[in-house]
Image 1 (cartoon, rainbow, N blue to C red):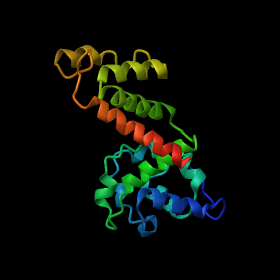
Image 2 (cartoon, one colour):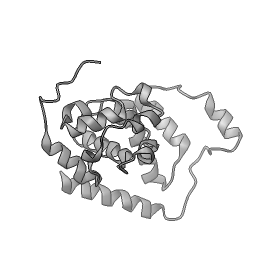
Image 3 (tube, rainbow, N blue to C red):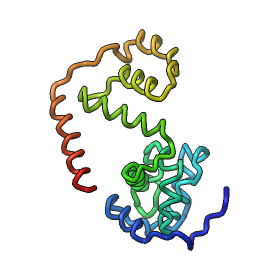
Length: 188
């Protein structure tokens, strides 16, 4: 990994933007490393969680928003529960993803595609329709046969259903998405 010059490309407004949108104070982080020590995905990140927090404190917007780490974070909240400063680190990572999406800086296209497919399913059916998500994701990503061997096994145990289940309140879930999209348009 190359060294990062923390004195160049500093964006102080970015720190304030993340703090405001997340409701968290990143300056409270004193780099104890508990978040990184507990993170189950650290080995896959280009910057461990504690380094993302340090980069945020240093106003390194471009480095963070172009990183893989914010997209690979599973939001398991291990970092949050381990933080002695009670910073909701997982929420900061979510906020960084939201900002990256807004600025069209998505380093992990398949992960974004999965999120979008997942949310489309929620909006359309009011709950998760696993088969629909799997098919839509595989078609859109070009991974046509990925996990195809799992389908029959899972379906035979009754864990997922071939057709989506109708639920009460599906229209209310769709309205939540509409309100969010309206709010996002006003933010732009």
